[in-house]
Length: 110
Length: 111
Image 1: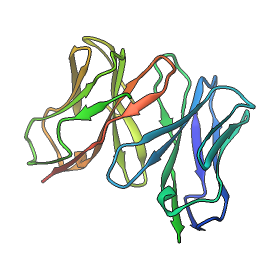
Image 2 (image 1 turned 180 degrees about the horizontal axis):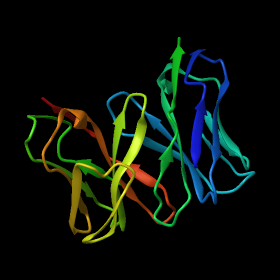
Image 3 (image 1 turned 135 degrees about the vertical axis):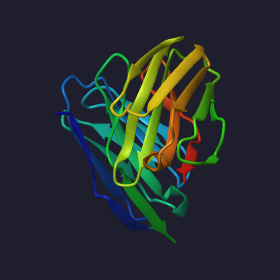
Image 4 (image 1 turned 180 degrees about the vertical axis):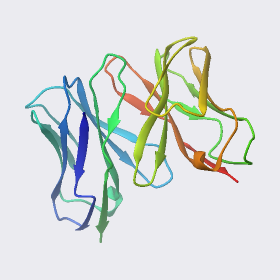
């Protein structure tokens, strides 16, 4: 059975304290892995798409990487505005259906 | 920028009512999706559509139906709302790269 697991469930960081979130997946035939950011009461906001092992994408303080079994979202020198829940999702079919992990809730304190 | 809009941010309905949730996208995308999000369960796919009038069941279609009469509009219908359908409902639209863009969500409460 396909599975997407995110860890940790929650992360509390001091401003400037870099860290990484993990998304491990066991699926057959990965077509793409996606990272989203979600603020409370809002819809997920797209961050990155990764397609193949070794691929990396960057945006401001965020960097996403992909291996054959997992993806990491690195947050470098976070600021309080980086506080959010970060969701990982995978797709394995041509319809593009997404299977989501449970998310990592990140809180960055000043 | 892709824009996905949903008809209501908050909705309160009574048990047994028929409920319509509407979603509109402005990017001429073929595929559209409806998810629900619940604490501890994450996002789960209810239905999706890959063309006008074409639909497929997702993982949890029971108690729901959908309608796609125009390419830009995808509606989720709760035929007879029940309290266990109280949830956050999210619509998404997919571009050719497989990336999905989400709307702001509708928080539905069924009393």
